Structure formats: C-alpha cells, structure tokens
Length: 206
Image (tube, rainbow, N blue to C red; front, side):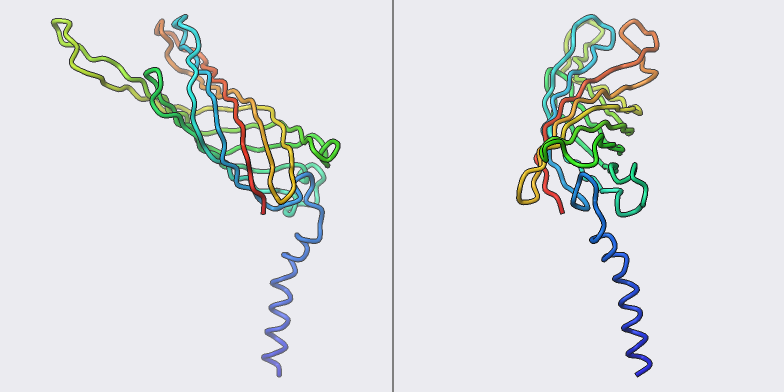
C-alpha cells in the first residue's frame, strides 16, 4: 500500500509542470514550438568592389521554442528562441551557408485582428561564403575552376510578421541583415559586410 501511494504521489508531481504549462497562456504563439521550412533570397554584399549586389536563392528551416511556459514574466510571454539554418547552392559563382540562433520578440500579446503578429529579432551565428574562381597558370592559361571559402561570425537583426492560420499552421515573412564584421574588402581594407536576407516560411506548430 505504501509503495502504491508513493508511486501515485511521484506521478502527480511529475505531471504537475506539464499541466501548468498547458493551463497557462502561451502568449501570441498559443503552441509550445514550431517547425518552419522556408525560402530565402539573399542580396550579397559586393565586398566594396562596386559590382552591385548578387541575388542568390536558397532554402532552410527554423525551429522555435516558446519561452512563455518557463517564466511568469509578461515580457517573456512574447518571446521565442529559435535555431535556424539555410543555404544557397552555387549561383553566379557563389554559395552561402548561414546557421545559428536568434531571439524573437513579439510586439503584441495577441495577434492584431487575430491574424498579424509583428516581431523583431536578433540572431547570431556562422556565415560561410564560398566563391568560385578560375585558376590560371604562369602563362595565363586557365586550369579550371577553384574555390575560396571563408566562415565568419554574423550578427543578424531583423523584423518580421507571423500570420497564424487554422489547423496549427502559420505563415511568416522576415527581412534580416546578416552583418559580418572585420572582413577584407576588394581594396584590401577592413569593412563591415551587410548581406540582406528575405525569407518566407510555412510552419507547423505543436
């Protein structure tokens, strides 16, 4: 009998946090987490060469976790933490890979009109830029393509809109600036690189 009572008490204690999380308001998210595959268009900085920006297309995915169940703070009830990764295959002689984490801060507690959730975000992570070059011999003859790759830290502020739709789905669009510091430009000087990213996602929430 004592063993039975002990097991019942242990089970009740284990389920209490789950019940509390389900019972409280989850802020503007209403669900605990979401998976968001997305398309991304990146406007690559020309590195100071004056050639203009290079537009590349790619795909990625984001996993965000609602912070509301972990704090009684009203500010955190409008916050999520995200992990993201996206990349673009070789296009116009360049390819990219960007991955890291971000904090998303929603501006309202409930979506405006039930459909519009504006947000600001701040991310950080690694940004790999790979360029395709043409190697030449001492006589000037081309020997075939070669590649040069660099990976730098990128700080990524952005703004976005989330649009919840029925059946646990949502749409999300973002405009972000992947800022890379201390990179050598075309002139050989140190400069800040701004790679603009525009994403569109269709997510499923749980």
